[in-house]
Image 1 (tube, rainbow over the protein chains, first blue to last red):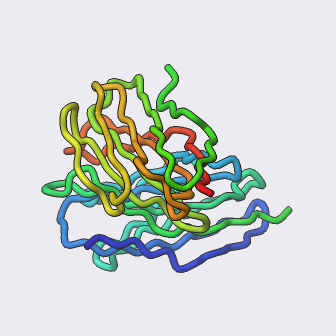
Image 2: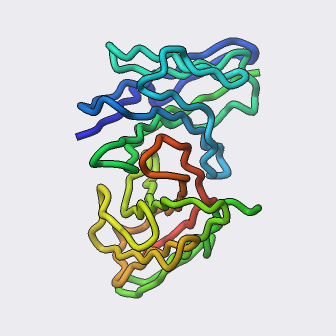
Amino acid sequence: AQKITQTQPGMFVQEKEAVTLDCTYDTSDQSYGLFWYKQPSSGEMIFLIYQGSYDEQNATEGRYSLNFQKARKSANLVISASQLGDSAMYFCAMRQEGTNAGKSTFGDGTTLTVKP
Amino acid sequence: NAGVTQTPKFQVLKTGQSMTLQCAQDMNHNSMYWYRQDPGMGLRLIYYSASEGTTDKGEVPNGYNVSRLNKREFSLRLESAAPSQTSVYFCASTGDYLSTDTQYFGPGTRLTVL
């Protein structure tokens, strides 16, 4: 069974500082995708960044980067230069391929609060 | 280009009532999904449709049925609502279930069952 673990229920960061949100995963699949989503208080799910299991380089999207350590099965999200608008819930997710194609597993999320 | 749309946005039901949540996407995506999100938790997959004409159970399918009406539309039906089905329901779509394409989410339906 696939599992995503986010061990930080809540995190605080000072504005303009960097923050790392942890995510570990468990899968026996060789091919999978790892995603991070942001859910602000308004409730919508906003895609942030994607990392494929065969990608050798860490993904980056603007202020977001994904620290992918395949051997450790971790996919931590790094947000640089935090902004007040980054305050939200963040979810790590994994999509499977092969016989379980299409299925996604989500972690329980981390609530990030950016302090002015 | 509206992306993924869901109706209704809010709904209150009494125990035992039925309703259908509607979802449509205009991105010509093959795969569509229904998730539920309980307070303080992540999303759990209810059902998905890898392509038009196919549907499969996800992690929490009990109490729900789905219909992939055509390539654009994927509906979720609660035949006899229970308080345990109080949740926020998200529909999502992606281009191809064989890839690791990004899933695009609708705005959600907030359902309360009394």
